[in-house]
Image 1: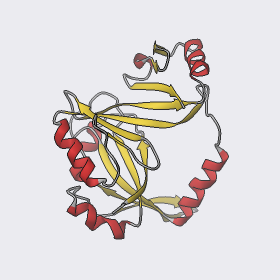
Image 2: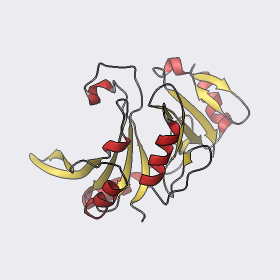
Image 3: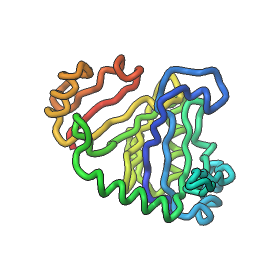
Length: 216
């Protein structure tokens, strides 16, 4: 049973400890969101697969002095750690239309690096085999490679590998031209390591984040 339409990266630059109630930690990426089919149709299935979904939480915006629902979130507690969260999002029809219009207006490479998409989100786990198996079960039939990369029809893949912490370690961005991106980063003092098929943003310039760029 396919439970969702697309995976998305939820970027929030700040202290993940604020979300979990723990002491503040270093700046990190700590949210992954999946755009779900109607939550009422998939929540029970996610429960059976061990994702431990939370109760739906409506997100409201103030519009012309009135509180209007714009989307509903369900946190998949079974996939969360103290350092990152994973949740489902169901947009209202009005918000879906607004997002679609924004996407149409932002076609083509974006910014000085020529960004065209997010290719991969890298997660490290102190128990990689168990974590890989849980994610594989929760998101079946999405395929997982032998090295722990979970791929989706739309949105970035998620790579789960061995590490000393349960964190979102970094991400891989796709650019239209690696040379253009490298020139831009170098000119602005942001270039980290560079090879023939991959470059990185200097982590010291982005609060320690691991961000790598590849050509689409």
